Length: 405
Image (tube, rainbow, N blue to C red; front, side):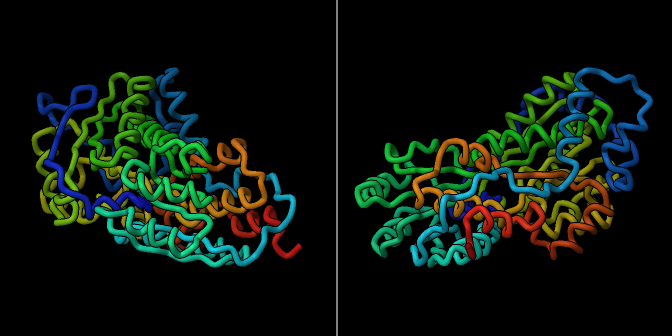
């Protein structure tokens, strides 16, 4: 949800789904004795790259591949992945809207959208939608005359009548955190950021990190909301990475319902699963909201030193927990950057230069790993807990947009 979610927490208002726990691959059963990861869950003083470098185990092709994936995500990006400028600064005063869900995770996207639009001299509006009736919010935006409309966590098949109206009126739609394929005038959707490709990259990275950190002895529990397709895609990518680079590793999936997440039952479900599957040595959160209360629950159950907590879309709470030694590693997906990307696409469309190259450059987003207390502290200190992404990303986008020229 987001934001994130990710945006992912938008599904909290959707109907519930029963708790499902299944083995995706490997042998995550309780048939073998529990195995604590080297150093325990609180042993986070050395990064994964350091652990790998100091390992005495002979290298393997799979382990080397995993190391390369982790190394590529070790540093926070310094440049946005697009460098083609607009031919001119876009016309000012254009009305643009962003349909954001009511969950806290979605609110992380709102400031980035407003800041980016205002940098262009546009008129942004954030409209909070009811996840059970997203079409109402889109209809509101269409009726209000917004030329470009961005959404998060909304699939086209849930807003079909409004999509047809948008197409008829020349209103362009953009998405985030969805698997819909942008087809421009054909389906009214001109770009999707944090798409399935982004989800796959997240799953592959976290799986690779655990492979390296465990020296090819990772047995992970993937905690997810299976009602959400992008999280399913993330889990499948993690499973594929284990199969490719660590056949001896395993991935179990704990599927929670939105009702369980909303009522705070997630931590107890995690503890229950771990007690009956003692081989698990990593708890992998598919996004940050699933992490709430888990550390305390593990400590209360006497499991804190037996598993390491890792996850995707870490925020301030996760990095503070990493600093305290309670959690081990999180990937960072800069939420403000996500919305600057969407506004960049809007700007390019307004000037007739939005092409597949621009969509491909930024559609899968950015992510990097934070896996030491020092790195987490640096993030909290430098960015105030907001993680804008590439250094001076706003200035880089504004330069491409010919702002001030």
